Image 1 (cartoon, rainbow, N blue to C red):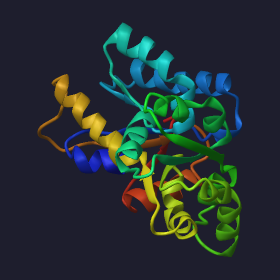
Image 2: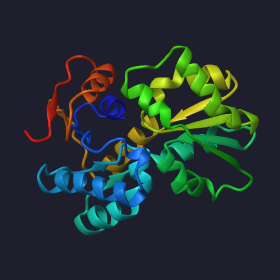
Image 3: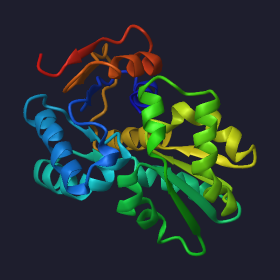
Image 4: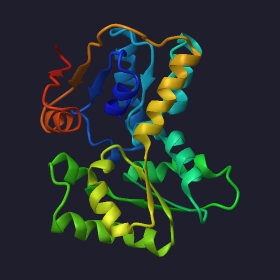
Length: 250
């Protein structure tokens, strides 16, 4: 997500917080995730002075979006951009047979957030599947191999049987497993990630609100609330080796 935002908005400074003290969110209840996510966003608003909040997590979006927009947008004028509706919108544009699959964490699937986002489109057939071990693989640095393919086949079999032609990768970890997921689903299935679509929404919101930075060198900061590993490894893999990861306490 951060990579896409930086690519599309090269003058904007990104302050990224990974809540490693409390992850994974996908195994927690919606009320727990709501409390944790709001605490992070409260800090970004009150102490860091951010002009926009991006909820770069499907589980957190499902848990906290309504509260976040009430607390920060309605009351403080700070726009909040999320990851679910941009991906749902892109999936609707991509499907040819009106059969869309969604894979995500247990919490995201239980929330029904994607199904709700797609409910207004007539004639859609939606199939959801929780894939909890995908996050474990990515955070361990394992994105290919026999075990990944074995688990992918088990998780994705119901989605394949449903005949989907479009699959939403409903977790920001899942694009790192795109090779294995695409291999199992086959070349005729379009994979939709929220990253680029959400970055486009970030761009649009900044332009509409006249908040965009048009010049200057950005100062990015990547922090975490707990252990820096495996967060550091993931950040460097996605962003490049030059990205410093700083404990949030500093």
